[in-house]
Length: 430
Ligand code: PMP
Ligand code: GLU
Image (cartoon, rainbow, N blue to C red; front, side, top):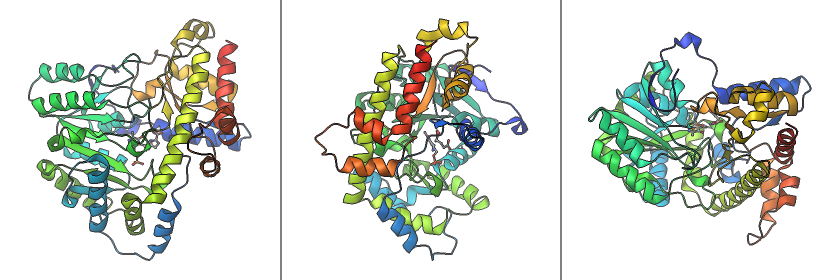
């Protein structure tokens, strides 16, 4: 299968579909732990932090809601989501154009089911976009990015694709801050991508699930520059620490109402509606407030300090890695070690991660899972194996003017700290 540039038809039978890599690495890690192994879980990307107390309290207070809700979502929650994007992204979203789903993952799937055009995805990309297209028998067009360009899509690359077959209906997925690379776009680049998309009438699915985890709190949405063609994807999973609550949101421009209505019909024929207590509680999360803002300030500070510390240690070991700007991922490139890895029979990212897990207990995912060539020695580190509640409590007592130093990381992000040391020792011993 050719990836990373070019149109790819993923025409496998769904019966051949393997479990999603992110879910599988978690299952494998848990299995090893049950068998008595020490495993550092840098595989699955889930927030290490607890759900803010006021949001948990809202869920408790709304547990009595028992009726099915409208498939599009609870009206009061749709209003809160519209206010959220107005306030955070300076984008006018109407509550009638908001759709609530059981995680943005399923909304992404329904979008691909409802939309008839091609899916365009810059790589590296999150693990599930392409398998979802595969399930639906839809073609995917992977667009190349590179380390030098911080793994970000260049507007010229999108322009070139659009010129190949002008007028072909397309959705391009942009995810920033990015999974698996932890980097984001500059507003000037977003503006230029918006110009290309507008010129070629490409729909942008802007996956902003890590938006509130921009480490400086300065996330900018492409919807500001291309409001008429952008669907914003968000949800509770990352910035609110509530992946297991399963609540995601899509905010559509009015021009795409028909597409949204088709998705609502699909929702009504499949899951009906997201759990009622969760939707009521989510209003509290999207409305925010000082407590949630402070929670985010501290969470971002910890993620930034830890991500930059790991990036520094990897660089000391000769590994190339772009410094993180948001979320909780790094996408290092181990190719400077290619010769020594090859001498040990390791020639692909999958072999590399399997060997590192076997020899150090550090579990993380190979670049191939993110749409990169199999022999490119990249991988994703999800730096979340620590007790987020304890780290937050400690961070809150450290003045915001003081940086969180190595001692903080060693004490409060201990497992991830140890995993990094073990990984670097392994590289040093090659
Ligand atoms: N997009 C990206 C980039 C992700 O990392 C994830 C993983 N949670 C999702 C979408 C889906 O998230 P959820 O279904 O929990 O909203
Ligand atoms: N998004 C997370 C990840 O990339 C995990 C959850 C998922 O993939 O659905 O690891």
